[in-house]
Figure (cartoon, helix red, strand yellow):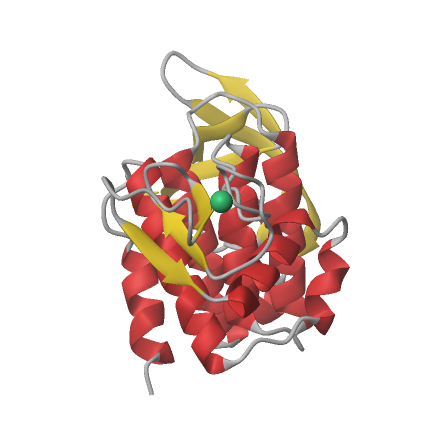
Length: 240
Ligand SMILES: [Zn+2]
């Protein structure tokens, strides 16, 4: 997820592993031209690693590449989205704790970017909502939290993490109106059984803007992650 030079020719990596979640490891000599590890420690690479556990850090001793998502690095937008997925994940998960479902989610999303033909903004909302849900922050936008009514208009409440109908909306805390169209898309992103459904999902520019604002409100309200560098870069390139 992250890589920086260390010492003479090593790299310090932040890895996201299926078995042990996030961990830091040194890839010795990975910056040297003839290094066997160099290619495998690139971004957007899925590899099998043999790690030696030292006192404070792991060391990569062997590496076999499973998949590389090479096309992501070629297109600047794909690259920024791919890196944003890593940044968000790195901030939300604990070191040394396994999250196999999130591991699969990241691979799925990288795969979508790599294959192309997908609306990247929708993919990013899918990733954020699913990630939050897998971490236990599951927004409720199926029906009114209070009376169960499925008739709009609806109002989102940050502190409740869900929607209310017009009659039940709380008066003592902040609520924001959210359109039926945006809600339907968010619901589908969160509950679609297969990520493949994303390919057929279409949203208007206004709905995408609404979803972006809503998802980030939710993210920043419930998690304490501070500003996201990747997100502000993406906002710059997405603003016409
Ligand atoms: Zn209600």
